[in-house]
Amino acid sequence: MFERFTKKARAVVTQAQEEARTLRHDQVGPGHLLLALTAVEGIASRALAVHLPDTDGLRALVRTEIDGLDPDALASIGIDLTAVREATEAAFGEGALDRGGKGGRGHLRFTSEAKKALELSLRVAIKNGHKFICDGHILLALLMLPQSAPVRALERSGADLDALRGTTLQEITAEAA
Amino acid sequence: MTDGEQLAREASSRDPAVGLRAVRALRELADRLETLQVGNARSLGWSWQEIADALGVSRQAVHKKHRNAEPSLFARFGKDT
Image 1 (cartoon, rainbow over the protein chains, first blue to last red):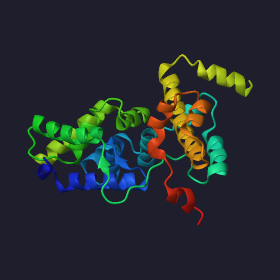
Image 2: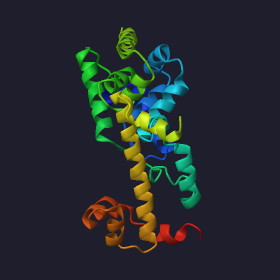
Image 3: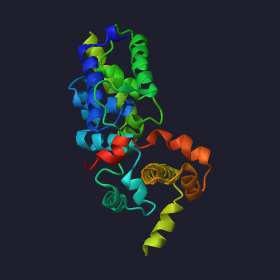
Image 4: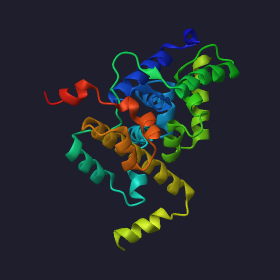
């Protein structure tokens, strides 16, 4: 399957590992793939920018969704995450409340959901008669994973997912021609 | 409105999306605090049974969930040395 990946798609896969490493996560999930798509200049990053000009805002939403510790959600039931963080760090040191990742070195494992996304990108390419898999296909694949960090983050960002799909597919087709 | 009232109002939010998000985040927060506290208790020499009793769960449950978080000798002594 990977031999069909374009240079850009390969760069996204590599960048996803980098995103996970930076966040000190020990696995690469679909959310890291979306972070990578915003970072690697290409069809996906351009399509995302059309519908969501605030890239930093989107990246923050994705990080929150990967992390699961959503300060706004906790605030909605009266819990001040900053206060909880301060209290635990006072007792146990800085970063005590962060998920206990080893901050992986070397090769990070892809979660089954992330692998599924990459497989889906192949299926999307085949379905559209494309002989290659590019970053745009990876974005379309991520959009097919309901309740995943990417879809949750994009929904919260208020983006029109159908329009995003349309733009992405259009760009891929233009590239293929 | 006091904080308590605010909390009660939000906790009973009728919008499932808001309420369920809060539950999910709260569960994640509780999990992390548990990991932190169990690790600390183990490094202070608490037995699995003592930890289980404190958490109100079975020894098997707490051991199964946290045995991987057992502090290594290095983590136990190495941090400040």
